Image (tube, rainbow, N blue to C red):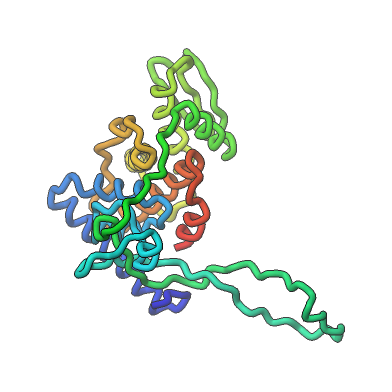
Length: 292
């Protein structure tokens, strides 16, 4: 199934997404307090995927940790166990579209002349089935992720803030607050250790990114704070940082599933931006996925 600009196919894709959001909202309304944190955990583990795919994964297999197609698992020396049910996601389809070249009357170039390679373009999305590592058997997999050094992460987070036009200042005068931000100006309490400073700077950077991101719906300060907390939690979870506990317990649902979907999209986009600034692996895949 290729999901292109065709209205009927696009609508069916959004219907699938809305059904997943509706299911998440119903679970929250039923008092399942863990369902949102479980989804945010999926978003953290699959931050190179789109928010829509993260939602589809969370709906079908919230414990998933590593997803590949059958062929990819085979290339890694593993096989999908018989009877395992695939997880449906949407994969970007890349290709080149033939251009309409007008006749100029000039002699044709020699066939031996090297032709410029056309840039690949996003043509649409197609439904595929992937499988979690726990659904496979075979050769052991090497874990490649390295622990994050907080001092390095702090430097990269500061660089991201400056790249986006923010200023980061240090002052003792803001005490007892550890950090404040307003219109791109971030002020931090001076002389904090990296383990103390990182979550404070993370909260303020995420807050300012969310404030500067255009969105269709006006939201209250309380909702903005909850979105900030959720995005910071996803970042810490993805980087395996203990400071994630400072951002747990966020609430994104206020009786409006449409607003919940909007919040999840913004939380995912903001968190992924920060994660890729600190740990840039997978940025190319993320660039393709976010176009969904």
